[in-house]
Image (cartoon, rainbow over all chains, first blue to last red; front, top):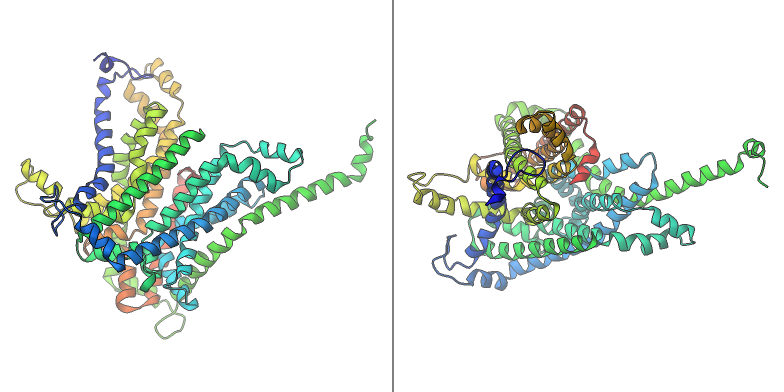
Length: 271
Length: 301
């Protein structure tokens, strides 16, 4: 147990004196992670109420979920909208990030500030604004309207992720390629893209998740047969505690954990 | 043989055409942002502008300020704003209290280990907000784990109400907002030169003095940026207060929804939204001025 008395590298404090910090940090990290995971055992309960630990185990809530036409349709809508959002937001965001980072135009900073507005404007305002405007164009309850709104919410995230990737990337390489005769577009796709592809992948996954998890705009803009999973979940949550939600939550936790680990794995590889 | 400098200077043709070419290229490159700008104009600027217009239209279809006067007339509107600021301020404070030690701990680890522990911050960030809100609903309910644990350990004698009130809302909000504070704070702490702490202790500072006089001021910009993000997100929050507040914590976003659901009063809902947006912008503007922050700081997320 010599470690305890060892100084923490650059100050005079020993590890032992700093024990409180480690304990506090451990508790906070547990508080961050445990609540989400506690849903997993609950979803396998046989009871109608949420119990922990469950007295008897069963998969009935998963059966309810997979056999319900309503939940299945909502899941497919959410997946479809998320995928389309990813497909639109990623290239649009990458283009914007490239434009702002490379052009050096005097308006670039102003345009960047404009692009982050979807993060600053309260989402409730975006939700009722789009609901009202979409109503005039018949876009409410359509996949098109929802994808449009989610794309705009995802664009700043993609732009920010890609901009920070450019910061760690030496754009002179692209200049070298161009001085050797490559066109700008070719230089971008052959030289730059392979080096920022992990950031592009992260941005794409993030835009998918942003759409898939988005609640407020979905509550207003989606509906009918195109209602999203989150819209139904929110409705169920506000009214009663339905263990089916625990089953759905477990699946969603699984999906986000896998996606997060993928980005971490690729991130390590790239650095 | 090179061309005499005087000749080039006199004509200046090359220089001018190069300049023109470079500014054309800059414009061309900037135009790559067009799709993003157009999309944001279509989905944010026009709809929000429309609401702005609606907020000034009275019940008779004429221009009027009656929607804004309602904010003084109806106590529930003013109360929604008070609750919103109360929840936002308290959530931000809780996040600072919990987030600062965590970020400090993570920043003091070797980067590989920090990356591993960072997963505990990133995982909630990637997990659906609804799922996390639901998890807290399950944990904090009357027969939930927290109550059962508290009872069995003898901390309290009968189940306490932890959810469908302010307590539950704050717990849920703090859990959701914490990563937004920790991430920018951590990245600003990582940039602090550790030699400065050593220099401080060489000059006779106790560890506590060295922390407060050297480390803390250097980490402040990250802390302010993180707190600002948390505060602004809190101002417009809807889901968590609606679920964990159980109708007892009415924030502006909840109020707006209620007005639209019950009264279809677009004017009043828009006016509330506009005031919320203005409040957000004022907070952002004042904070960036006072703390000399850059909007680009949001890019550190």
